[in-house]
Image 1 (cartoon, one colour):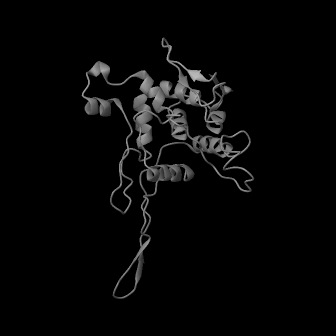
Image 2 (cartoon, helix red, strand yellow):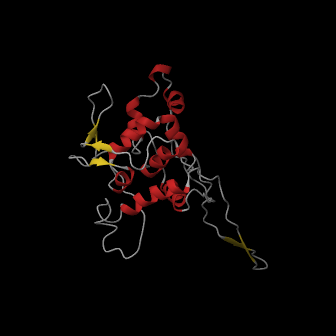
Image 3 (cartoon, rainbow, N blue to C red):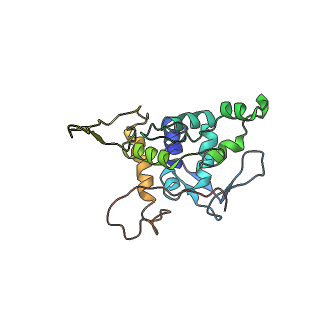
Length: 225
């Protein structure tokens, strides 16, 4: 989720590529002593957008999520098809869940002043809390990133063969709605994902080890450990 949150923050002007956020290993909301931990206990120091993606800095994305707010963040994620069916040509697909105050009010039947809390927005910034996504949706969202906003409907069937004549009819790709971001914004996020597989990146010593070609990727932070 972090590349999408970064893209949303750029889209809404919440961050600039140069803006640095201080990370000391944990984040707290103003007026609260509750600590939202970073995966790196000693912290990452001052990080910009590139470094935050490259090193998967949780504190950076906690901060950005707070500044974005739940409505803008959830709304932007749905443009990637999250929280909905991709339309794969096979039964049994699940929607997943992009949580929002409206969803929670309906799901939990809570009073208006007890619907959504700031800490839930912070957690959502790194893909935790109520957020649910299927492996297929992750693959689909990754393809949208790779295509810089162009969404193609996933499918298993590429062509059909007539059982009588044997003629093969190819099925044309189906394009879905585009994700709204500038070429520069796509480039910034992609550079961070390329960085995750090289140098000081969180996947450099594993998936990126001895790599002879460029590949973009992203590691995740476990919710329970």
